[in-house]
Structure formats: C-alpha cells, structure tokens
Length: 289
Image 1 (tube, helix red, strand yellow):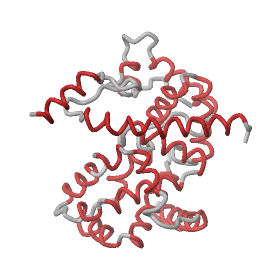
Image 2: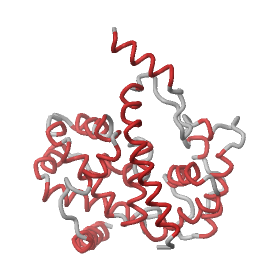
Image 3: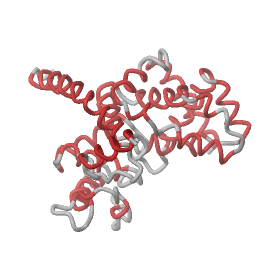
C-alpha cells in the first residue's frame, strides 16, 4: 500500500506530457523516472557547463509528404491544433532539404530525424543544417533512393554479431530472420521512437561528435546485454518480439549509465575495421543486384 501511495503521489506531481511534448503511457513508472531524473539533473548540469566552455572555445521532394500526419502523433507540439504547429516547420525543413539535395529528395524516416532536430533547436535553419550534416556527411547513402548505405550498415552489424556474439547470429540464421527486419528502424530513425528521448539525445551527441560507428556500439550493447533473453526465442516471430523488448526498461532509461556501457561492452571498434566491413558488405550487396 505504501509503495502504491508513493507511485500515485509521484504520478500526481509529474505531468502526463514530458518536457519534449510527448504523452506518457498509462503504465509509465513515475516513481522510477523521478528517482532517475533527480540524479540525472546533476549530470545534465555538469554536461551543460562543459558544452558551454566548448562552444565558447570555438573548439526532389515529393509533392505530397504523406508522412506529416504520422510524425509524432503523441506529441502535442506536432498536432494540428498546436500554436505554433511544428508540422509546418517540419514541412519547411524537409522541403528545403529536398531542393538542397536533389539526389536524396525526401526519404521515409527523415521526418522523424528532422522532427527531433526541430524539437531540440526550435529553429528551422539550425535543424536544416544539422539534417544536412547527418544525411550528407555522417550517414551517406542512408536516405538515398537505393538506401545502399543503410543496407550496408545492417549487413555490417550482422558481421559484427557473427564474430562477437556467434550464438545470436546462429539463432538468426536458424529462424531465417534477416537483420533488416529487426534493426532497420534503429538505423533509419537513429533510435527515435525506439529508445527514450534522453537516451536518443545522448546517442546523437556522440553521433555528431564521433560519427556513424556509434550506431554499431549502441546496437551491439543492446544485443550483448540481452543475449540470454534473445536466445530464449523459439520462432521467427519470437525473435522479432525479443528485439522489440530489449529497447525497453531501466537499462535504456538510465541514459548516462547506458552511454558509458556503449563505450565499454562492445569492446574495441576501430574505424578501419568498420571501413573494411563496409567495403566487403557493399560489394556483396551490389553483386546480388
């Protein structure tokens, strides 16, 4: 009874809508989140000071974007009744980027990435240039018509799992589950709507700072951490469900600890190794036609 009362009290104090505008689910654990965030505020303050010092140091779009109404339907800032409604801002950013990079235009998945950038920057211009950095430099060919870069990196993850977590790779082979089925959203949407907001933002910090191999670190950490759970799968459907489940829970919510884990649990992951695997996987994909 006392525990239930504490949970209800926490629920009464914390709004149903998070600071980013997303509605929390009915079963949201308010008490656990409050405990996590009270400690995380210390980390945020420390990181804000570091970022402030760092910044001071200088250190063809489709005519109808049918994805607009499907972008963050649970976020009050993207609803048509919002003032201002970020759907218009999102449309402007994607339209401008389509004209800027006609080789890419608009690709499904970009709306979620651009939407997060808009939520964080509150600026069309800043969101546009950050999107350009991601699509044009950090993740080349992820959003091109052929999506060759995306397909290549999914194959690379499969190779990394095969050498580092062979039992999981064998399970995937045994049940005929292609990697693209279970991780395409991880890669294409950069973990948006897959992992909690705070965790996604920390991953993106590293993505902009260190490049795309961070995505492999996150994926490998999730799989390695839950290897025993994944290996319990007994069917094709069960494997897919296990991969959905491993993106939930306290491990991914505790974002500061999670980020420390992605740089320790997968072990060494050199840029040269990733480059070699990409070259090999890309050649294999091209040979398949």
